[in-house]
Image (tube, rainbow, N blue to C red; front, side, top):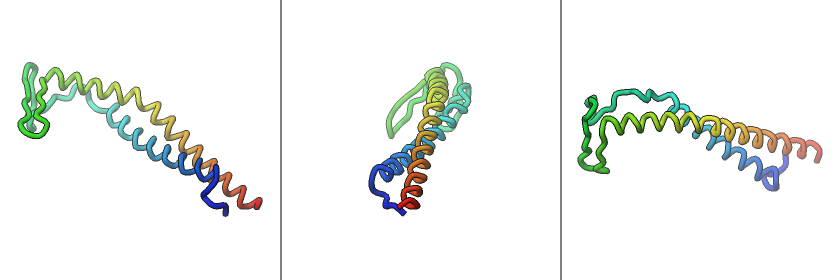
Length: 112
């Protein structure tokens, strides 16, 4: 069989990396796209109500309101929906490039 070096070896490696990166991105995008944007926000494990503000002590020290958390959830779902087709495309291109390079290496090995 032909060595992993040369143009086909590079295409195989890049295709494999694109496939793995695309699959991870796709998983994250699908998770975000299917999240419930209307889920009740929580602060320290307790459900918040409209008008509530959560102040996080320690760590990042961030604070957020009930309304801002709902807006963040909606934005996350919209980003997931926008990124899903791109992640599918990257995964597909990676799979095709990887598979094509493997097939090309096999043909080269048989012909040589």
